[in-house]
Image (cartoon, rainbow, N blue to C red; front, top):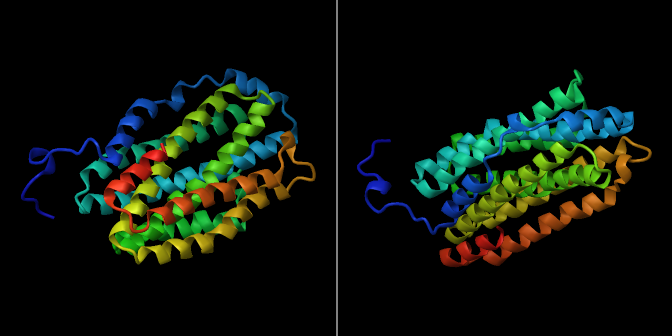
Length: 294
């Protein structure tokens, strides 16, 4: 598409916009490097863990490793849609979004290679519910934006990605990962990295809520696809959590399945309520609601 002007040479950037505020936070908080992590204590801890404990950590890691790679591969169509619409502030923030997802992919693979030192095929831990969301629903929703840039398609992609994959599954997974290690004082460098990952993901979810509420303010009809997507994917998402625990007679680290199922539903209900609250809101109200998320 040819251009006849540039926003930054005419009206400039809206630095008070929510995406630019996220960009500022990403510049301050998101610059951590997986290569700089000293895993020496984690390697010692790993060697002292029982086979069942190692198996659970590998299982959780495999879910993250596949998920982080999936979104790294499939995020570009969303960025391209935002760019075509000329939303420069949102695109500027989304450059950090993609960088962070790639960095998370890098971190988990480094953990596998240098701490666990396993040569196992980690996809063995991907059960049917996981494959339904990460092998099918997520790539279908995001890749559809290559040919359909409509508000409906954008809402479906963002709901799948930001509300279900990140808001339900990633947050619950990080909670389980961190809880298992923190309660038992294990893998300190991994715990520190997980904390940084959670901060990155909180910005991603905040952007997704902002995008969906903006779409709702402009196109009320997207509410139906948001509801349909949530209703379709909630049970498989909860199934991923149940599947992870179902392989153990006694779950390692004292983890309890109900705690994490309830946590996932709490995260979903919180974001669903926020979306309901934003229906019919002005752009000013949407910005104020979005800032509450961070």
